[in-house]
Length: 296
Image (cartoon, rainbow, N blue to C red; front, side, top):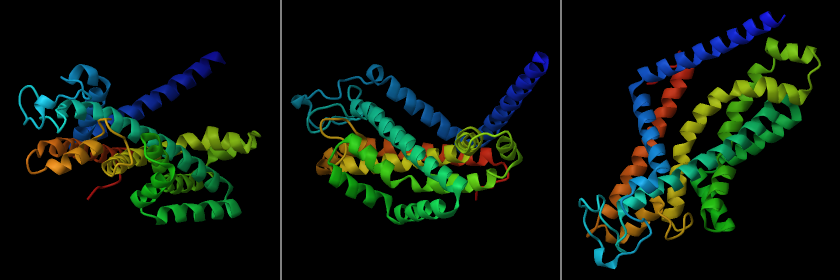
């Protein structure tokens, strides 16, 4: 008996290992996805090792070095307070990834839970939850998030809450669609036949099978969260001075575009590259998880 169980566990492990290797191979063949993955990895490493990479203290004011152009000492120049823009951009990656990842985790969690309940129970519960989803989805996310931040007040935590409240609808829709397809599969019927509870079926049998599409959606949703957070900080509603958030750095440099364009140019470029990298990675994951899908 133990031998059969061991063989089954080994077979299951081998199957998952083979599927993961196949996924990585398909992802590697997509050059844009590979590029996005490499850039994303570099950004994550940069955020993790920011204190060792940044040549200067991002908060240190040096009025003798105001608006210093890019040089060997200051690769991205300095701002109007003499702070190293390169160091501020490096430390800004930490704030960007913190806001982006935490907001997407909360957003996906809320959306997946709503979609799971809606798709599994159907009927009146499904109609109520989907109408709520339609209402949330009908508002432009940035405008909706802006309204929430103005009510909640400025700050990083409130920006994360606002993004989570306004961006869960796509996750709910994707999860509901997947649950409706999966809940009548044979393995679910077998779980019902063994007397497993509804919540056991939902969270142990169905939930693991809806992660793949939501992983892709989360990767594609993260750039939007970064842009929303940067827009909030640019307007003075997100990260507050002197925090080195990319949107806040862009805002600091807008009054000096003619005489010191580097203050806004470099954080803008880094933000653009980060958003593109996550989009490339998300598109690649989508195609790798569904080999039949062709991207035009």
